[in-house]
Length: 72
Image (cartoon, rainbow, N blue to C red; front, side, top):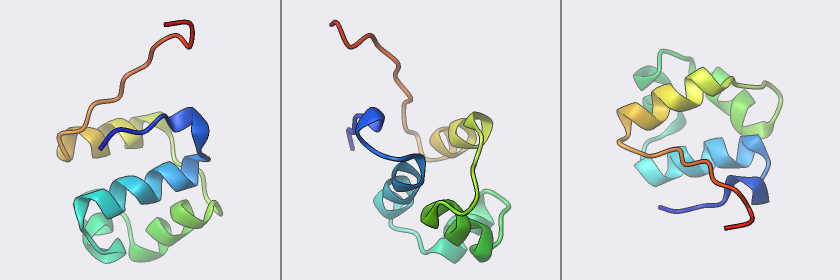
C-alpha cells in the first residue's frame, strides 16, 4: 500500500489503513485498544486521532510512515 497522505483527509487515511489490513472496525479497535464506536468516529472525521496513534497502528501493521519534501 502506498498513498500520499497529503492528498486525503486524516479520517480517510485512517479508514484506508484499516481496510488495507482487512479488519473490521471491531477487530481493528480491539487491536489498538479502542471501541468500535471510536473507530467509526475516527473514520467519519467526528474525532481526531493523534500522530502517536498513527505510529502505533503502523508499527503493529508493519507499515512505514515516510515524510519527504515535495521538491524531490
